[in-house]
View 1 (cartoon, rainbow, N blue to C red):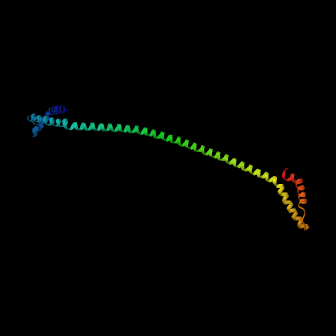
View 2: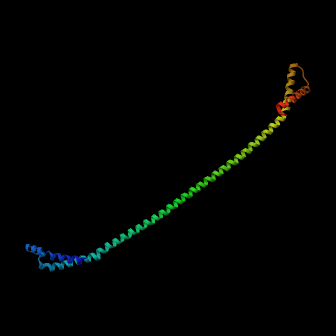
Length: 196
């Protein structure tokens, strides 16, 4: 590259030779052809030193920095790609966890619902049994009352009649005769009230 610049400089110097001689006549010694050899010598030395400094010191550092940046960029790209894949994997895992959680929650809800329904049914059955037992017990008590009612009514009727007659007549009446009358009346009207 430096050689190319050197030869281009020489070519352009000779190409503009007329202008150079015109400038030398005005008083520009660096354009005088007798100084050209020394100028070319120092130009070669200067550009040679510049070339050596650039090629041995500056350009290797620049290229090393470029390579370092390139490798850093590549590492960053690879790290970003790895993180993207990791994020996608974690997102899939998260979606799976959410789906499993929904399924588990649904199963827990269904199990709890079934348990509650079973408990309700068991309690309902127990309550129905208790109600049936109470109804049966009440019916038995009613039957017992029905069976004992005529006797109690007759007793009350005899006692009440005896008291009423005693107050009306003023004398005690034989309970057996009142009892016979009450029994006779209860037998006649018993079917009407007790269904016997």
